Length: 195
Image (tube, rainbow, N blue to C red; front, side, top):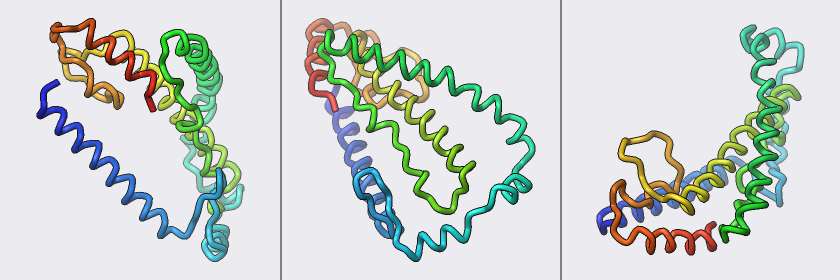
């Protein structure tokens, strides 16, 4: 990888850190704090949130009919998602130690904190939990597959692709065969300390 790309990637990493800091500062002004896994709002904010919560029947009447009709289709994905979770977790448990790849910490990706929002009723909290699980699972899966790709074939595509994982930009350029085996081994060594 050339120096210009290294500099741009370093700038991107710096901007991502700045963004995380700015988002954290904004969250700090939202009158909540995190105690372990629990999110706690100031009492006044929590009381205001409770006043905004819609009761079940009011929510049901005001809900869009297409949401109710498509609900079984959406929640029909729960079983495939659970199976995917089981298989990818087993794959990581069984194979990553053999390859010497640091394991992906599941709890970094599957975060369930929207249930602490008092302005959501029980059904809305259930919907949020499903989305938290599905999106967190996909991010967890993406990191596991990204580490696997980095171990076996850290080579970019010839064609531009959308939605690449965070490791992809550091992969070898398509067609760059110089010292491939040595560079591949360097990727594998780096994966032992991956975070």
